Image (cartoon, rainbow, N blue to C red):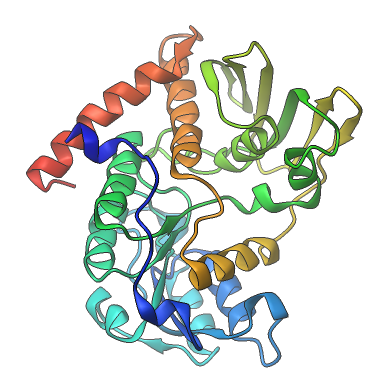
Length: 333
């Protein structure tokens, strides 16, 4: 099973329907505003060039069973999606019967592993909205299943695709010596602390610094948290998560320039990347980088449990990989 979770080069995507002609998109989960926002973009009467040639045609409103912020929104979001000409069906199988590609939008990461199994079995490329899973082990297991089947999978925060973070990643300020980001960090007791909302600021941090975080320390208070990551080359990155909701932002420190990272870019740039992914089967973010983002958040969670002691990212990944092996070997959730 260890080879299954190697996350090497993914198999070439060779399933025909998503490579030619108009693409039919199916949605699983209608308890997040993201589902309505993506549908509005893809199904616009005159869609943007970036998303032209694909349309959301079917959706199943399954979602969280017990998170009030999700269950209370499901009916309204389902209606918003239906109003865009989308057929609402009563099962994942019914979605897969009509869709070439899938948006897994259930707001709760815990059921994602079971919800994605039939998608992978049907060999449909899938975008998994945040959080990918309800634990780091589930995130690792989901990516392992997709790799084993050779099915393209992609997940990302919208904050990655802001103009300034992308410019920094592309080298606009030279080598990035460090980065500080900030943003909302509301907590959901059913998930590790940063999985629910802190992921946006942490993904922006990794976008600018790149992968390679070795160690994480967290200092927490009632109204927020500060996470400090030390990269393998000695660089430091910080995330300040705030409660209640506050704006997103940050600063990247390059050898040539210090640059502000701007605010929330909205869903449009992410929808553009999803559309390109569905057309090509090539994820714009490597699996290993996405998994590292979740490992950073799990390490921060563990650091909090240990009273602010540093936690190595490699250690939480090793534990998660072992647990993912057990999940997949036993067919467990």
